[in-house]
Length: 114
Image (cartoon, rainbow, N blue to C red; front, side, top):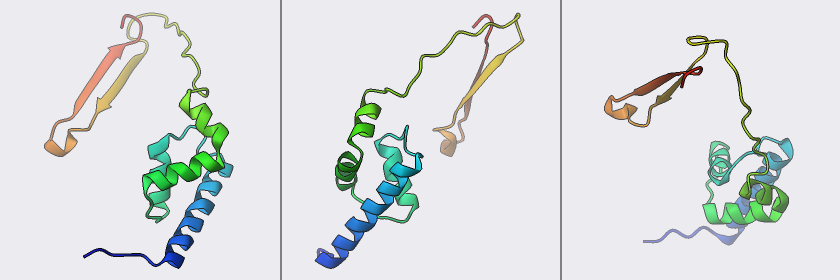
């Protein structure tokens, strides 16, 4: 059995999605957003969207932003830093994708000697 959404409800959803995407674009929150972040932001607002339709609307409403995000024009090169000696700065990172299985991986590295 297939469920069909009446045409007027689909148009209302499409309009609500366009308004929400336009709000996200004009708010400046989405400057660095990639495709999945747009999708998640809309889901958090309670909009059930298909990715294809969402991508189509984003491309239509923000073509320059899509182009900039495509070519990573917002990323800046990392600068060099200098530490006075060993044990002055330690960088720590965690990998928690396996946390549901009871596995947590952490790593630490001395920024001076790497």
